[in-house]
Amino acid sequence: MLSIVKDLLCLAGVYATVLWLYHYFLEPLCGIVWGSVRCLLWREKLPIRYGPWAVITGATDGIGKCYAEKLAEKGLKILLISRTESKLIKVAHELEKKYDVETKWIAVDFANGPEIYDRLRQQLAEFDIGLLVNNVGFLPPLVSFDRISETDLLDLIHINMMSATMLMRMVLPGMKARRRGIVINIASTSGDVPVPYMAAYGATKSYLKSLSVALQDELRGTGVECQLVTPGMVRTNLSRTFYDKMPWYIVILSAEQVARHGVFLIGKTWHTCGHWFHCIQVCWYPLLPLKATVRIIGSIIKGTANKVH
Image (tube, rainbow, N blue to C red):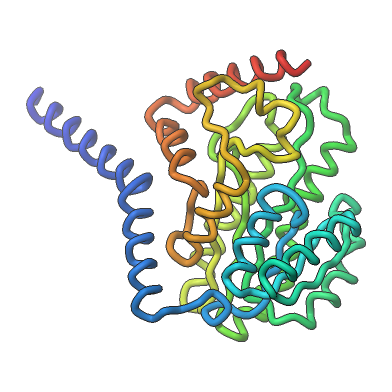
């Protein structure tokens, strides 16, 4: 009887190890290899494979701007969406001058809630959208949940969740009718497990992760794809108040690094951290009980918050 129990425990350990290796290493590696081979054999360029226009939200700074640059470099026409008109005009002119691509822009503040979407739907209807990059985001101060203002909580819902949800709902019918296109949702590793002192922010990213993975299955056979990108700490305007206060062992990447690797992986993998540094940084999460993982991450964030405040 004891030997049977030992054998079962051994099998369970082997199964868990294989599953962990498959999820974090084998599946992404196979996707990257096959996607690279496919690109070499069929020489598919992004505008041909998906469509001529790339729509990018939060496109005037950070990851969004870098995605716009990398996609323009691939020959896509770029539709920039952000809230500040002057920044949009500046970035649009930079892209046109450097990459010789057509650009358009729409100034909209996603914090304004549902009333913005009727006009936005009409504006997007005239474009043959091949790529949608849902990047716009909002990160409130690192404080306990009860200290976050109600305004910040509503902004979190409107910017981090409603914007991606509504834009996907707008563009997916056209993509499915054309049988081509891809939605790229920029979430965060903070959506992988609950993060104390970033509880509401992490919850919005967890929502986006769940929605993206479900859509990937719904879209099978339609010619349309959905890619989930979950970077860790990135040097952007969102994190500028605290990223230099993080412990030395937290890998902090530039927005350009995340966008460069993210664009390379378009069509090659359904889920990426945007850079292998961040993939390595989170692969330990399932090796510990969830409560222990949450406690460790919470202590790191709390220590950082104390340095900021």
